[in-house]
Image 1 (cartoon, one colour):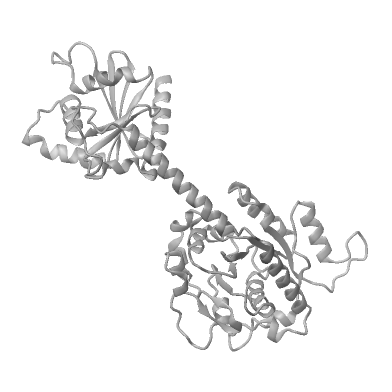
Image 2 (image 1 turned 90 degrees about the horizontal axis):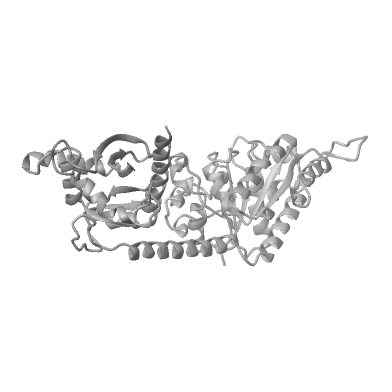
Length: 455
């Protein structure tokens, strides 16, 4: 079974997030000794390492290595109290681009072989790291100490809505509550009741109980030795000790009752998505006749040196060999003769074609326009060719003849979009990610051409 993932998250700093995460791990282990409890932090203050590191042992790896895909068993260290932890890292900002997809961490953890309960401590910010920790979580505990920190919770709920995640996973936990305060008037006796009422009024679910503010507990993080001490061993006489034990029991009961873990469901989704993409890729390959649309030559299904072509709605699809398209363009647009003298220009054209899209459109019956677009769908250049009669006394340009051969398979306001594939790998343009980029550019091109037609 996959681990039960508990993410501690709040966009407000100073709410006791890391203290909660580290102590929760210890209390879980104390309540159930045979339970595997693992902890790591995306924050860079190294409190996790300071509390759990045994002696001066050097880490075999860090959270940085986890996010790079290194096997988790190579990174987990057994620390104090039997809690497993993954050492922290100062290099995490380097990985922000890698974590733009919030599902990355879930995919890595789902294949880790880890069991038990995993606790993730996050930064006080809904950044890429926190997003990944939220996406992977079975339970998100949101510590709040006042109404401003409670208001910040709205963004966490919006994240769950945006990614179609069950909001039942989110739980508010009032923390650092001064239990000495008593209200004389009004419906609430103390700050805990007030915060809980505010949370429930906003539709938020809450954990049972709260974590009190305690000078004794706060002092456990501040001492000359630089050591972080746990409440279990150094704060047994405090109210917080009982509250953490109660919280840990809730988490264990929730984990025991959770039959379908988040990582299990995500891996099923991921496998379904992979199968769907494979099917779509196969269907794209099957609808393409592997013959050059310009010369009719049979083409191999792999090792292609070609441009991929589609019309505006994808009904017409195929490949044009790179030499064929180069001849068509140079003899029509640049009006150059074939020959060795043109080889340098042809090489430049083919090289630039790896970073461009080319478009043929016939806005009027006697005109063909050859456009060059960049990868963001912006027009870089346009050349108009006539499709009837001659072209300055010469025969019709070959590019217009190519267009007319395909014309009966096109709509009235149609266009052809061409993209050169990597030499010897042009068939890879039909793979999921490149094809998604192709379709995105096709949509942008359609908008650009439509806008120009109405100007």
